[in-house]
Image (cartoon, rainbow, N blue to C red; front, side):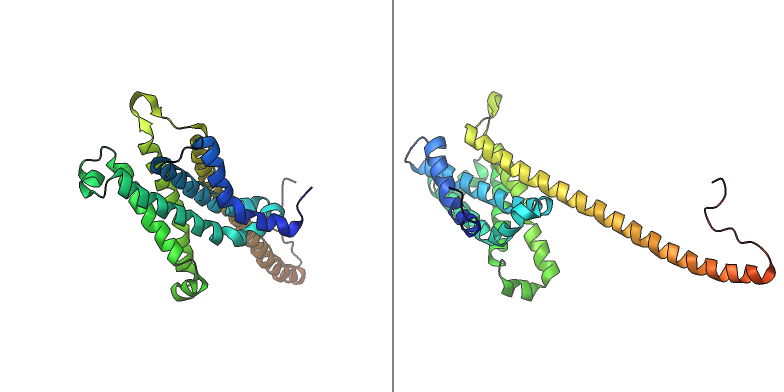
Length: 245
């Protein structure tokens, strides 16, 4: 039976739990370990972040389908950050053994660590400023710029994922659902680029139309003045664009 309209909106609240269960079953194969919990937390956090950023462009492309989900981006974004915090904590404790040397000086993939660190800082700032009070304090333009930095964090998160999962001659190699989450992140970025380009093209077209309308209005006013003068002088005024058809 199809869900009613209100239920469709509320169903998104179960998305974090659904992703955990899907990854636990089909990615982790029911494995219970700190290592697998860490990977699942990372994948769920990345997937939720990608979905959060994807909703904006989708709402522009198909407003009738996705506009109603825009108000849930904060909910999904905060859940994404929560899973990222879990991933960071588990990594520091179980992967790096609380050792700064292992994180920075003995880490063959330290670039991935730096990328993750910057992404975490951005997500943290976005989370603590994701309130109306913060928006009022910062001003909408500054607040919006802060929130838009999330796309930089998404790029860095994908870079972190790619670097850590690149294994010698095998290259970037993960399980199928890992590829799916990575592709979802790329899709969110691509959708944003397309949305921005479409918006700029539309804005440029609207500005062109407004310019042409203003020019036509100015010319029509000029034509009226010249026509009146020509009628008095018995001459003929040739408006712009006349001749050769």
